[in-house]
Image (tube, rainbow, N blue to C red; front, side, top):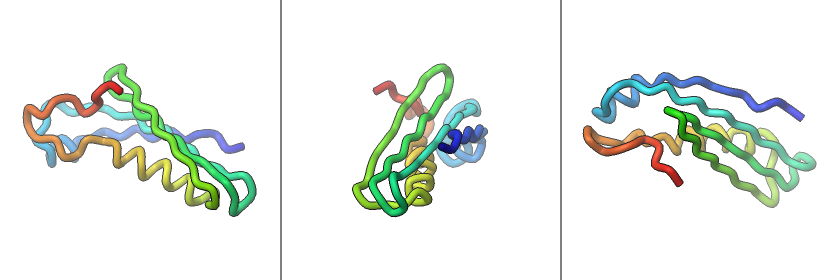
Amino acid sequence: MTRPRSIDLVDDFLSFRSGAGPLKKVQLITDGACLGNPGPGGWAAILRCDGQKKELFGCEKHTTNNRMELTAAIEGLRALKVGLRSGGGDRFPST
């Protein structure tokens, strides 16, 4: 079993593009795996920012390990609220 990887993203480019306020540090932790290759698999991503946490996950009936690893990273990045404009609220709405 592989250990989840942690990527610290300083989202200065997100702040610039979105017109948001001060820069925030976001931690994205991802993992993906499957039983057999190909076979049934799943992925998960955790986003942490300012003491808040958002968990994402999914699965596929017929997939590969590489696909699940990449899906976790892609979905984690997709969950960042890039399109916010000035005064648009939190990047991490609680769920």
